Length: 424
Image 1: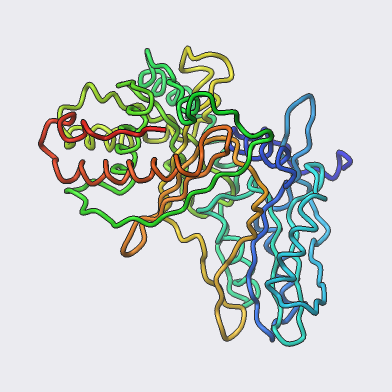
Image 2: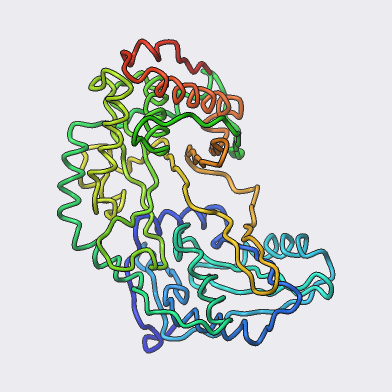
C-alpha cells in the first residue's frame, strides 16, 4: 500500500495485539460469521449496502501489518469492494463449513481481513459468510455491522457515529488516572500460579498440547439484593483459585467490555474496546459471604474509566510482577446476545459462527452465560494445563461455591466453604 492510499495509522491496543498474536499462532487470522439471507436477496443492492458500510466504519477497511516488530492498524482511504458470489450445489451448511476450512489459512496480516462471501444455492437461497478479524470488532459492536448493511439495504437513514479512533484518543487521555487507580489496587500483589497445579504430579503433557473444552449447564441460584451474576461468579472463582493455589490474596483476569468511557455514542463505536482487567480478592479481609460479594462488586463499581487502559500497560507499569507476566486464568460473564437475528427477506435468521475445532487455547479461560433457566459454563484450555475431568471438577466446585455463598450470606466465610476441595 503506497503512502497516498493511507488515511490513518494507529497503534493497536493490547487486546488487538493478543488477538493477532493468537490468530497467527493458530493459523487463522480471521473469524467467520454465517447468516442466511433468503431466496430473494437483491445481490446488487446488498453489494451497495456493504460498500456503504465500509464507508460508515473505516475500521472495516483496516489491515494490520508488522513493522519494527509491532503490528499497526493501517486504514486506507478506499478498499476495493470485498464481495464475492459463489454458486454451490451442496447443502448451504456444508458448503459454508467447507469454504471456511479451505479459506482460513490463506489470509495474512498484510491483507484486509474483511470479506463478504455470498454462497448461492438454487433452492436454499443465499448464505453470507462474513470474514473479519477480532482486531476489528468485539461482541458488543459486532451486530452494528450487519444492522448497518440491513439499514442501507432497506434505505433507512442512520445518524453519524463516532469512530474507533475516538475511543483510542479518549483512552490515552485517561491513562494517567487509570495508572494511579491500578497501582493502588495492585500494590503489594503477586501472581500465584494456577496452571502448574491442575495436572497430577508426574503427568507428562501431550506434545503438542490438545484442545480441552468443557461445556455444561447448571441450575441458576437466587441472587441476594443487588448482587449481579458477574459478581457472584467472580467471587466464587476467587475462592476456587484460592483453594487451588492455597493463597488468600488472589488475582485473576476478567474480560470486560471497556465501554465505561464517557464518550457520547460509545455503544455505537465499532471496534474492540474489550479489555482484560485484573480482579484482586483478599479472602482474609472478608468475614462473611456478604462482605466478599460486596468487596468484589465495589471493585467493579469503582473501576470507572480505568477499564480502558490495556492489561499489558497495567501489568508492566502498575505492578512489580516478573517481566512478561500474564494472568493464569481469565473469566468472562457474557450478557449479550451471541446470535443476533436479522432479516433480509420475509424470514429472519440468527447469526451463526464457524468453529475451528483444531484451535488450541493457549491459556485457561472460563465464560459464563445467564440463560432463562440455568447458567451455561464454557471452560477452555489445553492438555498441558488440565484434563477434561479436571475441567469438569472445576465447574462443579465453582457452582457449589456459588450456592454456598448465597445460602450462608452472614455465616463465617471459612466455615461454609471449608470442605470445598479440588483434588487432581
